[in-house]
Length: 443
Image (tube, rainbow, N blue to C red):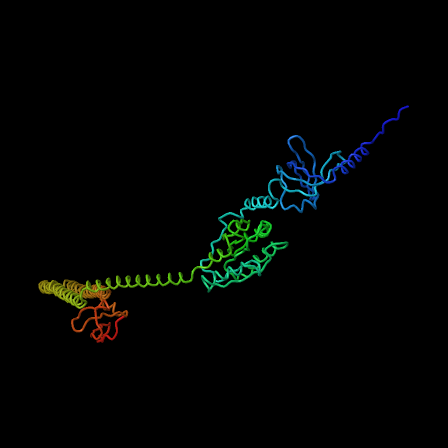
């Protein structure tokens, strides 16, 4: 009688297979493309590794997933180290990931590209957000190592170009654990104090790992949120960090950053002198134009005495006309009472005399009323003419503090200080009276 083969339950067989696989493949490297990526709330990462002909399950538990410097995504080619096991509830074999890196590109580089894409989509690198650098800052803040060469380079350049600008150091670690948080906190501290006009954030050159603090998200966001303009001066000209994209300006070196914010004091002084000369020339030209206008206006104004004499003659003429008018009215009205009296003598006293007397009184009253009205109207016209004359008169201009300078003798009006000489005698006509002057100095 032959012995029967052993019969396994599903659980027994799955357990045996798992034990066999774990013993056979305790430490393997697998290359493949990530697909079906899932990240539940637990923090574990589940995905499949596949190539052209096959695929297998993979699990990166939370501890491993959190240590990755970049984000896993579908389609990414990776190199995985781990051990093979079986997930018994579904009978699927899988690799438990202990280490993972991108294939063909470094982990830091892919982390750089992923974070750059994310922050760019949020608008942190938008050129419209960048603030202009101050033309002449009173104080410059430098966020860097207190023992490195960056501070020395910045101070040297600033003192050479514009020694009146102050430099304030915010010392931080520029690489290693915690460096990124120190840099971000220094930026926030400078914004709270508001004691600098511009910030230089930088360090010397190094590898991608050495410069990585300036690629950290916390630093990039602190730069983007800063109200103080920031210049990124990290590494050398060939080095590029995410801080460069978020900063308001990028300098290839810390020394170049110092040159950006420190104008040459000698050039500024020379420019001020040149503008002062141009301003003085413009003022002299403007004064010359206005002086010529005053001279022309003075020449074209009529003699105020002639104007007054003409108006006096006009008033006299109006008076003569008024007198003649009154006499003419009287000449017309006087025969009427005589005629009435003659008629009354013919007809005798009575009602006719009464009517004539009444008419005579009315005529005299009309005459008396007309005379004041005519006189008032003539006086009003005289006041209007006198007011206009006063407005146009140069005497009114003199009453506001101006004067007319004339040579003595000669009566030539002086409009240019260069037209007289020291020792000349001049006559100044004021609103009230005249002054006789002697020229002692010409400016």
